[in-house]
Amino acid sequence: MPPHVLLLTFDDPDGHDIETPGVVAALRARGATVTVSPWREPSVTRVPADVVVIRSTWDYQEHPDEFRAVLGAFAAPVLNPLDVVGWNLHKSYLLELARAGVPVVPTALVPAGSDEPVPAVDAPEVVLKPAISANAWGLGRFATGSAEAADHLRTLTATGDVLVQPYLPEILAGERSVVVIGGRVSHAVRKTPAAGEFRVQAEYGGTDTAHTPTAAEIAVAHAALACVPGGPEALLYARVDLVGPEDAPLLIELELVEPELFLDLAPGSADRFAAALLARA
Image (cartoon, rainbow, N blue to C red; front, side):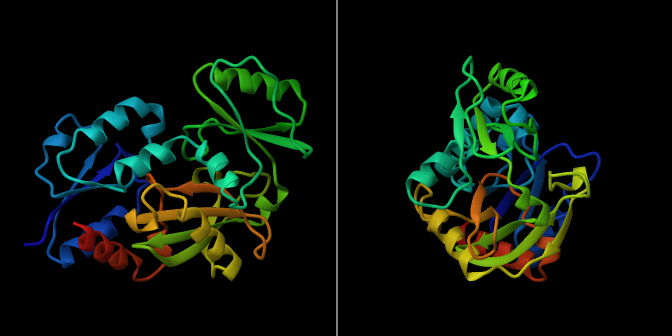
């Protein structure tokens, strides 16, 4: 009997989540029963689902403890698995990947409550971001050594850990995302910031186009996923975000919790997602 699938989303009055409807249609075409619910809906953990899938929970960074508690309250298995989600929620995983030999954008971690200065970076500009964040939330770009950078660090460490990275101007040529579904590379996209902007998200004017990943980009993706708790076979989905030259890319994010997968830019990808999900249900 086809399973009952619960897809977790967020309250989305502006319609930012454009890919969940395609996933719902693909699952129903394969006979599954599908419920879509914001993760903060009080009754969500009582939905009689056989499997729970995290999709567009794009406000979780504002309520991380509540998010963990809700995911832990389900009787049904959660995808991606809870140990993977816990590992990936805090971006200190980047330091772990770097220690394992994955080419990662140089990253320093400043703990919450610290009064230390901004760590030195070998670049004219520095980027600061909360260690738990999504959609460029809390992200700031400043001149290295500036008072503005120090002020932003103090603001962020007042509430949580902070990552410090050099600003890489190569981002202006586009950040590439390699999307892996069911352990296989499905497709890739190039996310290009708007003129005068460095953030690639659509809410900042960024544009997304289909991209053919290079052998080097695929190799970095596989190297990063090999470090995930439980191994890559534990994952339903993954998005590997890369910057720098296409023949020598650097990993800037490994998105395993609630990434947009750009299914609308890859014909057949929603059906691949549905097939991989039901194979794990």
